[in-house]
Image (cartoon, rainbow, N blue to C red):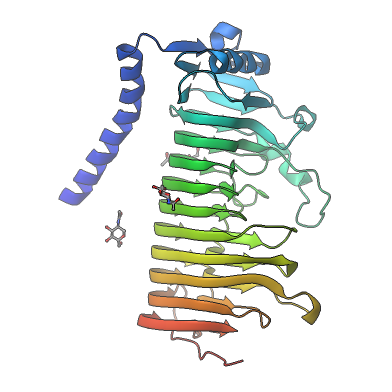
Length: 404
Ligand SMILES: *[C@@H]1O[C@H](CO)[C@@H](O)[C@H](O)[C@H]1NC(C)=O
Ligand SMILES: *[C@@H]1O[C@H](CO)[C@@H](O)[C@H](O)[C@H]1NC(C)=O
Ligand SMILES: *[C@@H]1O[C@H](CO)[C@@H](O)[C@H](O)[C@H]1NC(C)=O
């Protein structure tokens, strides 16, 4: 009880803190110049489009040579594509105080590139304030055929961060994106905290957070329920930490898919810790495709993870391959430690590696996964083409490693 109280106290304090930091900055620092979208003509009625007002407010704030803050106040704004282009002139960080609700224009032709908001090439960015991004994806999901059609039109992500150094997003809600909610690409030293991300279980490609070609990204204290991956870590990502995230529904936390496109870079150093997955398709997954030039997926720790009715709690899938195009992704040094809860299928642990390039140094330590359905015939871990070590508790029982 005391612990619970303490935890909620900490939550309240840190909640108050975000606001307090902003408020204090405004009070203490008379040099901060505020750029409110209302001043630039935005209409908080949810009907009249405010795209130009948002662009003008950003451009004025970003080009201001002193400390600047863009403010999106309470109210509902209808907005099309906005590129928050940097670099900015003032001292970092550029602050975007986002309190209201912003709704995306529904006409797909209003998005010349696949993002609704894009923050581009900025050193020092803070986006916070408790506001809500509503992608209004509902009408567009039925046109999404990207699972069958490689030339499909990419729908816009709610927010893409591209080339941001020293970025922070805190306390932002994102609902019903047309495709990805948040995309973090080519970013360095990027912190994500206290997001609430949601879209229906049936909505296509609504990944919560997708990371690619980024270094030193931390995601914590976040709730994500969508129709696709909760968090996916794509090619070229290094030093990624994901902690205290709740996922579900959706497809779980995924490294990959890797190897779908040519010239992909390595993925190294990913820690996923203290996360809970509820009613997801996968728990923690590493997935590679056959073909493409060789690259490395190395150094992953999945620790203290709770699975609640998850279809494939632990899964490595180096896609089945014809002899000509086996996976050339090397998967090595992967540790699954203290993973517990329930599995919705009878195969709770499934490590399927490629015969051309077996997985190396995979560890399972203290795995305790029971079947959700009583009396379901629960199978031992299944595995192929892998150097695997078991220790501690093992439920389901370890597989017999085939020595191929
Ligand atoms: C997250 O957002 C959903 C949908 O908007 C809402 O129902 C839920 O209460 C929110 N959760 C938290 C923890 O704020
Ligand atoms: C990894 O990221 C953390 C912050 O998340 C940072 O403090 C640390 O220096 C990074 N390490 C490397 C080797 O980049
Ligand atoms: C992570 O989970 C473990 C086991 O549930 C718990 O002992 C530990 O305190 C948690 N750590 C944090 C930082 O929440």
